[in-house]
Amino acid sequence: MRLMIAGGGGFRVPLVYRALCAGPFAGLVRELVLYDVDPARLAAINAVLASFAGQAAGAALPPVRATTSLAEALDGTDLVFAAIRPGGTAGRTADERVALALGLLGQETTGAGGISYALRSIPRMLDLAAQMRRHCPDAWLLNFTNPAGMVTEALVPVLGRRVVGICDSASGLVHRAARAAGVDLPEGRLDGVGYYGLNHLGWLYRLEAGGRDVLPGLLADADALAGFEEGRLFPQPFLADLGALPNEYLYYYYETERALAGIRSSATTRGESIDRQQTELYPRLAAAGPEAFRLWDDARRSREEGYLAEARPAGERRDETDLAGGGYERVALAVMRALSGGGPAELILNTPNTASDAGTGEGTGAGTGAGDAAAIPGLPADAVVEVPCRVTPEGVVPLRQERPAPAQLDLLRRVKDVERLVVKATSRDPGTTGPGRREAALAAFAAHPLVGSGDLAGQLLAGYEAAFPELGRLWSAGT
Image (cartoon, rainbow, N blue to C red; front, side, top):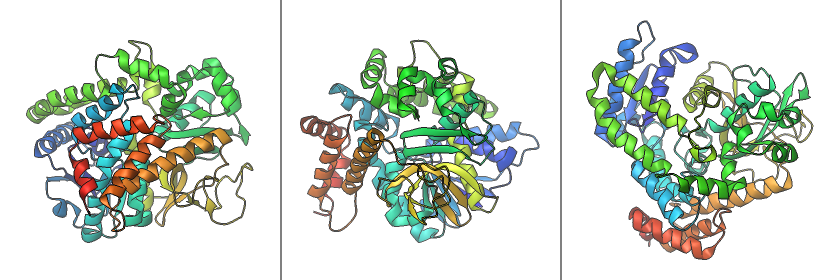
């Protein structure tokens, strides 16, 4: 397959390249094309790949081509990985700081910052999808652009089932929990795993071994929970009462005040830290020659150790167990391999909620035989959700899950309503006027559980409009 990465100057691109050079994904790609609007970032990442190739004797190295021409990058492409960041890391800093200044959570994908990010990301991704329809209409789009679920929902009307949202957070949780419970999960299989949610808002509710659900035992074992990140984020009695393991991003919902205090106690936000790192790093990578990959890898490790730092005691670093779990590049390449005929795979992905009856069934542990239905009962069938899916050359089919508990379903519905308001705010439907888009954005901020105030919504939107002039152009378009 010919693979194109939109956002080819992105920091995590070398992870994809490294995975393509050895191991189960070697030989999967006949050509890798890197596309980016920033030639300097593209040159820096190209230098990292060349450095890695120089050290990878005997590896199956796919040829790499870098370009700033989108048409050239898309022509003849079979599959697109999209990981773009409109506004760069400076934009992420503004997403965080505008919310923090109003006493709200400042986080990249969750709450007010996630809405702001989506308002910038979705229009650019719609542009990409339109160009794909023109230059490679049969290609698949694997979307990593955050907020991944929201962006994927906006793209489904354009690309249909040929767009899939990718995130490694849910799969990482499943594999870490399985390891802690002593459960062997074969690669590409999720037998006995129950997981439902939206991107960055989900729960592992069942984990079977030998036909028996071992999750209750894990939730009752404080020592076992202390051995991995999600188990440490929440008090053990809370998890036992909940009867499920939350995705790490639910820390921002269940422990909002602690999360906010942790962010405020730091001299810099996560976005500011990454912005400083990359501003200094990228010119060094471009000039480092054979040392470029080592420099990049050192920076990668430092960046991963600082992830979700507000949830850990000062000075505590993530260990190898927390850093394990597959990585988004391996999830994406597993999807690519299954779509290209390398064998079926079961993976947790973001896709519309219309499910196969071959899933787990509602509370039964087996398929119901009821035919197509919602993968997550209680949510609209056309809503993009994050659930275990079966991937084959025919496409991605979500597997049926149990109906979420009332409190969980209520939260999912509230956040899904927000996501759909954001999609409306960025809609290119001729019937949606500029003022209507701004009103939808305002309603999205007000309705989010981590905002919950019309007054704060107005202040947030005004702050983001001042930081990002393109939002004003979005509201005026079509008027």
